Image (cartoon, rainbow, N blue to C red; front, side, top):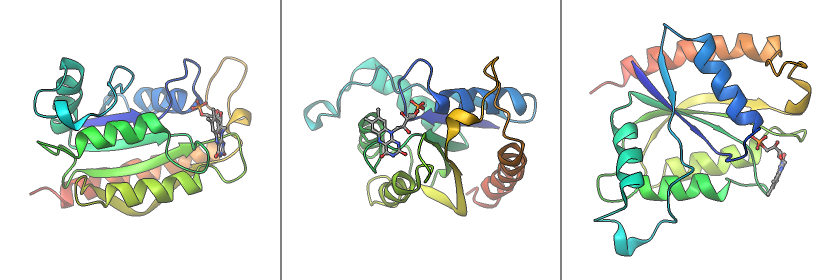
Length: 181
Ligand SMILES: Cc1cc2nc3c(=O)[nH]c(=O)nc-3n(C[C@H](O)[C@H](O)[C@H](O)COP(=O)(O)O)c2cc1C
């Protein structure tokens, strides 16, 4: 089963990207997880939506071919990072590759509320008529103070969160099967 991961931070040393890489390693052999990069997407422009640059075509193709999408994102200024919103705007038009796509959200931040505000905005966008993704109910993985969750070698070490992620990944897989057309 191919599952796409969209990381909402372009930062090289992003904690969210490191958590996405942790997921890929931990569930290797069980799920085919892949980070689908949004780094090269141009800013959305309706003038070019019917004939977009190759980066957009390749990005949308990967999302279309996935059985589900996991968002792993920081919160920027109490909302969704602009780069992530841009990617969702591309997805919301023409072939609308997120329609009925099972998704869930993981978010890590330096602050105490662990991306809660970003996640509620993201759910709102996922529910919009253009995007119309399915978001797994009652599943918000909030990782506050993420800077404390890595050891000196850069390994993600928060056992409580890791156990929770194991449960959620299992639940997500079952939920995807349930939502197949
Ligand atoms: C532009 C900007 C806005 C931010 N706004 C918030 C915020 O609203 N809430 C929060 O908890 N952290 C905020 N932060 C801090 C991020 O949680 C922190 O930089 C985090 O490491 C970003 O995720 P990353 O490591 O995956 O890049 C902000 C950081 C930046 C660069």
